[in-house]
Image (cartoon, rainbow, N blue to C red):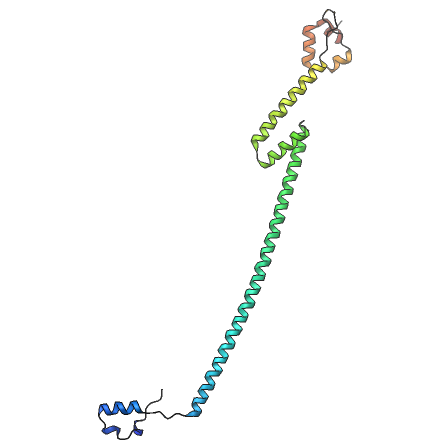
Length: 197
């Protein structure tokens, strides 16, 4: 800050304090117009530089945000595609597991519908349904065995003595239980079939 040149104030040394204050208040600095112009020019140059820097920073920020938004959008699309692929793989694995388990249940003698239903329940982790279907299968097997037993059960001839004529071929197809029954009920026929008579 420029200093006041008191030598330019007339009679300053002889003034009272109040007069000195009034003189200082009324003092006008000599202004060097060339220096003022230079400072104004420098201030304008600095204002222009700051304005330019601010607009460049805003432009870079805008570009950065646009790129960031583009990257975020691409990342979201990539994640969405990855989730769709993972979902499809999970569905394919489930279908494969159902198919494999269905084949196993069919191999155990399940009917087509019950095998599929049980395989799906097994893959879904519904163990109660698996056991319920197992019980249905067991009952179906028992019914089939009873029906087969009735169909293979020889009927005695009408008015006969209770003995049934059995061919050697029929005897050969009999299981242990049927042969035991024949042995107990018709010992002569049994002996004949095994060749002892």
